[in-house]
Length: 583
Image (cartoon, rainbow, N blue to C red; front, top):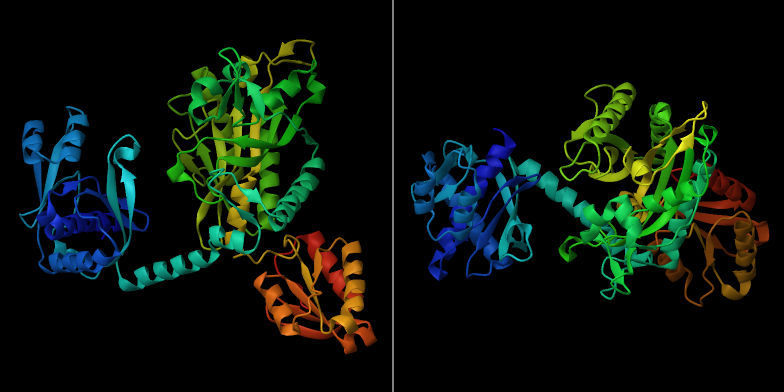
């Protein structure tokens, strides 16, 4: 059985169960109930507030309906018949009226006493769902049709799989994901926190800022070697700039605005593109300067609906590792391939698999459709040559308003897919800003701008990394790499400081616990911080000039020379090793 067919059929079974259980308290109004990746959900408007206490009763009623082998019967309806059948069902009536006149309307009866407006298809009868495993996951508020001005419905989420083994595997996955949740680990490890005074605008704590700067250091090393030039531009610009760029018409609803007067309206930048373009415009450019790669770790702000904010993964304030590469039309393919080389290099360091996606022209596109077609063709040529035709995904209508793009999606340790890097070919903005360069024949030509980010939002990338490594960062990325524990403060504290000084001189991040607590408590504290290594020094280590080393993996080794440990640390930093060295 097709898994979506089973899940959609189960959604009707649950809707019938809810109606049977709660219709005595008042009319149950039905919303929609689609299948989703891990099961399905159904939206209800009913007097009873569904809580976790109701889950068992709903699941039991669903089992009863399945055991009864109730048939699913399809019926085609005219618009008038459908409105009569669903009279009083406000949301169904609205859906019926919004459907095109040419649409064939169908309803499905389940067991003769429950009917729902639905395109189908469904299983023949509920008995075919025997053996399926399902579990109600949660109830959440959901605005009708996602519009916060419309009524709030109760959305019941259900996990559903063809068998108990599949459901158990998924629940185990959820348990592991919960352990890795960056919203829990971030504050616990003093990486970041969020406060209601600045919704979706993270505060970096010292540990988190060390990880942030380490990521940037790697980024700069890779990009400076490839001729990228970094700038730092204002965060506020007059709306005249955003009007020229097209953001005012296409993106204003997502911008934070500062109005000083009717004539002076500023916008906090949601993107870095116009600032890079102004930098290009400072002087006349020659073809010899192209590709010109103007990069910025820009601090941008984008207004989001509050209900969509999610830790670091969906924020309103973030830093993006943008670059705007100004190229000739002949350089497009080679430049995109070089950008993809950088993405391959950086993502391999973190152990991520890459999935490229071509995102094409959206409905609200800006500019000449012929230029759009040309840009999409260029991107397809690169993807076909690099990955092979059919070996990448296509997201129809998913492009930016000014150009199509290649989005890079990565798969993490839990096999989840995240959108991170993006490469966008733009023929439009250079024309909006009248950009030119002097070609080898002395003629003025218009450059092409390739907008690109590799990490994407650094906040989002950090959130992904926290969950990828479950807070146990590789040595080179860990905010504190080594913790030092003197067995007796009076006897061994000076030796611990001596070792720490050597480590710091080698640019290794280290912390010494000089508290008067027990050695066991000091070790426990460092373990809770998930440090890669803990060094323990007592009489034997001090007298021999060695260290005892406890790795995060649990491995302990005594009598290691400080020089050998330093060499191992420097190698892990240099190679960006994912695994800890065994000494």
